[in-house]
Length: 336
Image (cartoon, rainbow, N blue to C red; front, side, top):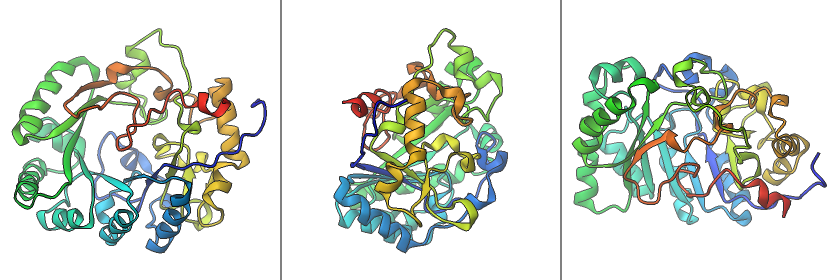
């Protein structure tokens, strides 16, 4: 067990899900594998303001806006981003990009959005249609070309990036080169290419299980239960909103990992509550099999090779996309 209860009092980043539903049914995502209905809600803007107001005096500097739904479905997204900008919080959205029209893109730039990270899974039109569930390969590329032109012409400080996943580890080099050809070099953007992961053990096809392809790696804590980053879902249990969960990889089985609800408790009360403390205890003891959403998760293995390629300056395996803070190793901070 933990030697004593250690009071946590810092939240530097929120990973906030404005809406839990999505406009696509991507083959590799638990949204299509069957996300629980009670987590597909929309969070009221007033609840988001409350969360930000609580987190600001605790050190809030960064906000990753996505969760696991599609943030562009949230009609008040510009207002939410503007609120973050007003309070000097750097923001990033993670989106599939289908709804990222030039008009919406410019409105978000005007609201002060820092980084647009577009998930483009599929290295050509056919593979994109297979993995993203929609024939929008050319549409997304065309919109991104227009959006890049807006950045160049209007001099907004926002950054447009793409994110790609290798689907199956048996042809990594081919997929990487095709992503470079058809997305990254074609558009001239910052990007990153990753090996697929198994969504906390749910996505169990052997061809994408990191631990199977990199044998001999010892399990260690992913570090997420110990950090200053809080993961907040739009929905929650029993009709509630604002479920706090330990990490993004519980998508599809969120109900097993709820640590509290912002609707009911303060951020600090959740962070220092018994459920969160239990997660930290299990990870400190490396007794991962005691937690269902952790026991088969491939994030427990150190696989630096999973970041296949990137041209984003300073981007490294194990970091938060927006703050750059490392996840693994954060348990040492708890014990100090």
